[in-house]
Image 1 (spheres, rainbow, N blue to C red):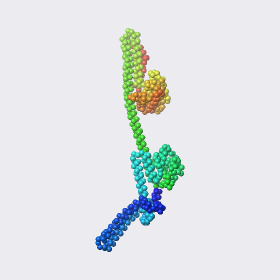
Image 2: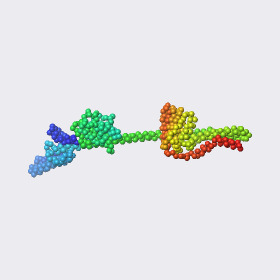
Image 3: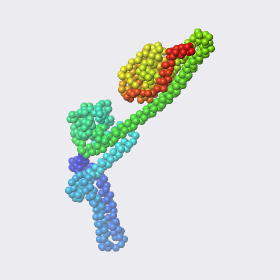
Image 4: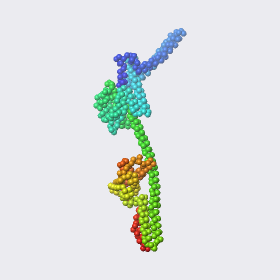
Length: 567
């Protein structure tokens, strides 16, 4: 790195104005001096022990030349050993320092290390400074990793990455942003010592960051002011050296990290790029973590919505089932009342008339004829009433003629009962469908028109039917009062009829939607997917029963009357 090269030239700094005291006070020199002083002090103490013993012996005993020579020799050997304890480690450190600093090992020994320039000491100093720099880089990355693994938000993590990168690379400012590959737009997310353009979008050829992200390549600039795609708002900062790296996750670019310097002599090197790439990897991981967290939160929200929808649909289904049971019971009660109060009473009346006629036969032919006519009318009305009950249970015209005639017949009955103008329009090719689809569609239209005649106060109703090979569509529209579904119905009956129609349409694989505005009427739209039309044989027993009732008309009564009279 460049700052290490500047430190390599520090050996000449003493000659250019830096004093020896300042030179020796540098961190690397201070550590080395402390090491040498400790080694020399311990070695000197060890070498002085024999001399101290000899001095004590001379003070207390008679001088012996051989002993003096022996003590001196021992002291000399210990002193040489102390020097070796300094020289040998210093030699190995110097050789390793030359390898770390990338210097050619011309002389791996420490020749000439005792002098004014200290070349080996300078090599060791540079290596120690580089080790210290590497330690600072590791500590910075460790802080970033710990912060990224915490619960901190994305902005805080990216801001910390920028601050650490700017400080370690001796830059002055930087920013990091997100790249939207689909829209090809870059947006700033965090900045350090410069404005944050969070409200702006930079497309291709509008900023350096967008170029880095689009082409997934690093960009090194010596002078940012000469870059053709520079941001005009940053010209006042007079940035010079600039370096931008893409943020890659699984080969896809999700952003860019850019640092800048105002020092005209600063140049970002390949080694600086390798260091910045470590911070870029952490920034990319932070973006990906934030994305995954957002995806998880979105899925949780969707799951909660789905649970609420499921619970709501469950309640609606329970309401629909309760309403279905209620309708069934009401239908049974109505049928029982119709049969008891209508058919049964008329049959009883006809039976009484016939009994009265039989009592006067043949004495009073006119009386018998009158009673027989009354009985005939009562039986005919009973048949009509019974036909209506059977039709309500199962419209036989649906089995005999198909869906469109059955709907037209139903609308005619509604028209006669309510005196409302009801129109039926059909498009496409009417055809027969499965019995389930035909009876389901029939009941949906019946319920929708019944609601319109009872509650809408409409003057006209339109039923539009569209037949296609794959779909059956109904559109029932009235010009009535309209209503708000959430406000118009009581809480215990809310949406009961609508839910019943929806569930019936859903059971057929279709859908039902309702739109209503107070004062503008109501529209019900039903779409039912249909398979290929095919004939059906359902309801043959009912057809036979109906045929018997149809054949029992006035002509048969007259024939019976005539034969009875003739006998």
